[in-house]
Length: 375
Image 1 (cartoon, rainbow, N blue to C red):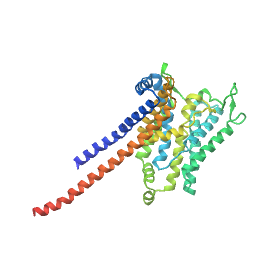
Image 2 (cartoon, one colour; image 1 turned 180 degrees about the vertical axis):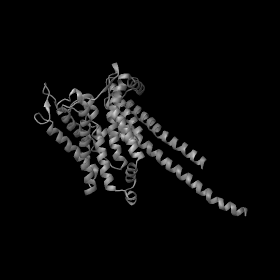
Image 3 (cartoon, rainbow, N blue to C red; image 1 turned 90 degrees about the horizontal axis):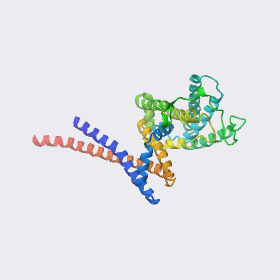
Image 4 (tube, rainbow, N blue to C red; image 1 turned 90 degrees about the vertical axis):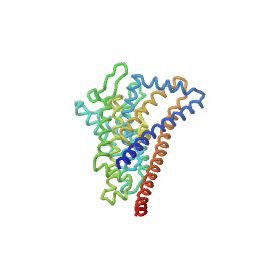
């Protein structure tokens, strides 16, 4: 039994390492072929990406980007663990950031009070917006994919309507940008001054806390066990006494609450206001990062940093004469290679497990026959 467990652990470790390595190698090969197709040499491109991406200012940029991308990945992953496809993360975080920015600009309270209020407001707005899709699914059977896509469009329309001069928005002096009232200096989040490398956003601490809570709740609590059980089999979960509808609605609300935090690093550490050029599309990036990280908190963190690294380095490559579309190609290739690699390794693991079980059953069946022959 000890020998079998040791062999199983070694094979499991090997399969766990083989999947990302296979994905990286495949992604590098395909990316090199794409660069070659544009008439460029991939060798200098990869070397330039590595050199520029490891510079101190690039490291700060990557960590700041990863802070936002990590929250997006976790928000999507909560839905994935329930077998729910929350495409509405994009609308949830933008509406949450807008309402929180409007609230923060109107507050005159000390930072120790206003900052938690802004964060809680963002989480509440994101949770409530996601709850609409959850309620529609459990009461009317509406697919969360359809409802969240529609809610994204509605959120965009609501923001466009409210972010107008005279409502919740104000024109800047040049008359080219509409934004909410800037946050008072006391309502701005702290930063880590790294000198010439720039400022590291302090919200990275909150992002890390969210990752720890995500790991603990889903992996070490009864609620997390029930949530994962419903994601694997609703009928089995229902038979064991788990309220399936309640878990579906709850997971959507939790996903929306985390989604509400996505815009907070930009709002509290960078722009200090919500304007018509506030970053968009991060929710869809979170889907790719959750897939890259296989819904694991550490995997999502690595995926978020990889995404930040790619953005930093491929934008730099554009100034070196490479096509700007390379970023999208590389990102798509990496996600595709990761999905394929993990599926190949998963099927291989299942095949190996079936072979081991078959060999043990054959050995057990052969045992009584030998004893009869000896008798």
